[in-house]
Image (cartoon, rainbow, N blue to C red; front, side, top):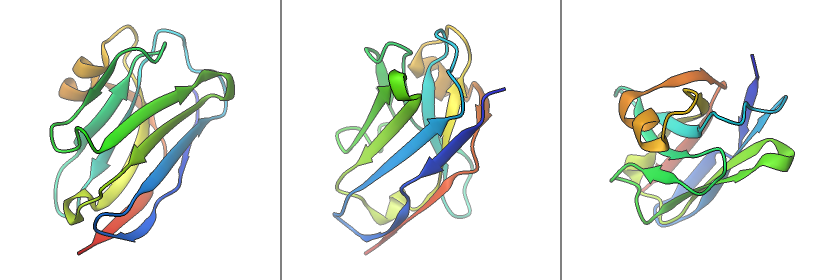
Length: 127
């Protein structure tokens, strides 16, 4: 089972930006989408964004649409989450995940179909 390691979290003020990175210790299966989800303080898991293995299909939660961008670097086994115009509501621990094989990014996010994930990285946005 592939191991995922996230980095890039930190503390920023509202309106700021962060770029999260996730590296896999081996190649992810070519049929598996990748995704990011988060745990806001005191709340349950929230899907944030997903991307198809070829990078052409993406899905975003309504709360981050237009502000966050997910991308892939398959040659480096990496997935990124560029987060702009951050809001205090974006505070939480962010996890990179492998989605269920052959599922679309939308269905992975909506059904929380994650097969493995990393230890997460903390994002704190102050007002």
